[in-house]
Amino acid sequence: MEACLPCTQRFLVLSMVYGAIIPELQIDGRPAPYGVVNERAVRATAGIMFLVGITTFVLIRTTGSSVPLSVTVPLFWMDFLLRVVLGPERSMFAVAGAWMVRNQKPEWVGAVQKRFAWSIGLAFASVMIVLALFMGVRGWIPLSICMVCLAFLWLESSAGICVGCSVYSWLLRNKWLPEPAVRPACPGGVCALR
Image (cartoon, rainbow, N blue to C red; front, side, top):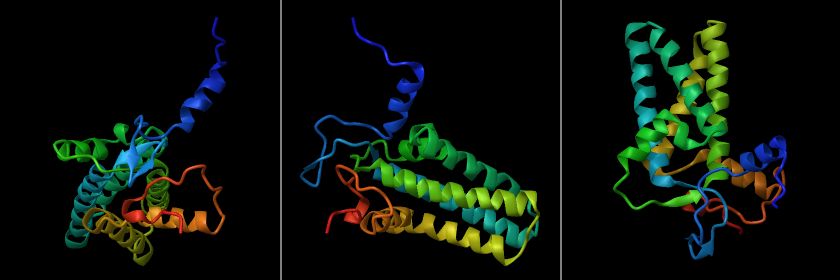
């Protein structure tokens, strides 16, 4: 008879796995026994979010109304929260991005650094909710946060540069994060051992 884990232990074991585990997957000739996400879908998702974000920015600048901001910021916050906590398959923007590239060959990358990057997006959206929506702050502070977020989305979607992945790699190199047993594959090789 198999011993069952108590519910709390079972939950902890399940929550440690993030991304899709694909048996016998190899990335750049190396085994990938960790959770992965499709980089093509991630880039498509960033492109959709960039379009929504830039449209919101233009509407605010041309109309002077903050209504688009009060819709877009909570939407981005919820989307990043779903991706960080439950995974990209539960995010509305990520589902749309995955659908857009459904006929393309997947390009697998490690999920842990993408989760880290999405946590940065969640932090930006959280700050914007507090400053712009709850406190009513206007001017250069929320504008700067929006511009940085839009720049990150543009870099991801058009240039394939994941700023959060680069930060994750930098934190690993400088021993601010514990070294994983196997370094996940990052887009462009930015997480590779040197």
